[in-house]
Image 1 (tube, one colour):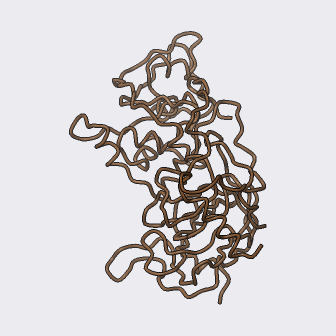
Image 2: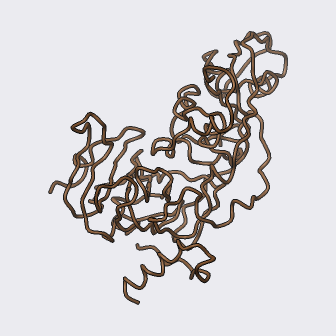
Image 3: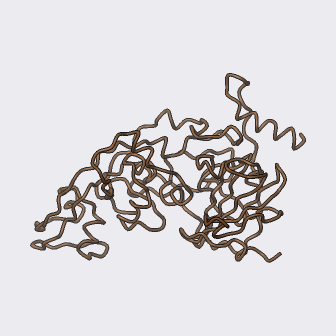
Length: 364
């Protein structure tokens, strides 16, 4: 089969079912934390079944895949209001039991009292219980879904709870929800207050895990689809020397633009349908088109805290949770999102911080 014919079959996967026959199987792509109170794993949802994401753009073709975890596991905003108080530790108390009794989070109580893991307490000790709204995390819930439910930026929840790498929530954990100004808001207002971006996906896109449950092993092929309830983590090995994702002309550089707007990566002009390659071995953290400005988007986690981001793609060839190798084709270029021309938006991040890719890629 020619490449043009193969691409035609893949693009057919984006046409509504009523207009086409059932799609052929997708082609092979190239190349314990303690819990405050363990919540039960939810029963499977119909939303877990393979279906295009609700935000998928018509100009982006991708393999059949489950909805993102934040859509498959919506969150009810049922945070418990906790008053600031002092608590006298009773015989037999643990910090987890105290958190369950007061409604506050283990981590918040530990921070307020300068307690270090494994958080020992003793009878007669007086603890400060920080007040606020605490959401009890259920299995499979994501930070994105929690932030959407309350209409607050996820980065503010991260800051309020001092969350850090690898940003995995755990079932039974209680997270502090920053209070919104102006009192109660409607569900539509909460949804409108939330925006999705690369940082939010990286820090709030993984589903909460149950105590003793290890993150999923990366799948080796795009034919295997990881359930949205399965959490993934970055590889442990350092990525080594990066390679360029495409050969093309840089038309916009990293940093502030002429009008003051900041570009967290570079934009490379390339012909339509150019193969886009992974710059190093890694695990796919996200595939989709729910960040409107970037259109077709692939995010790959690498070892050493590195993450690479590939936007404006026209065809996405990998699945979330898939292990990819350096130089493997993960997408084909397009002009989706807010692209000015056929181009690749490419970012490189160390932790949460965008860095200039041209300083890390081989010199040309």
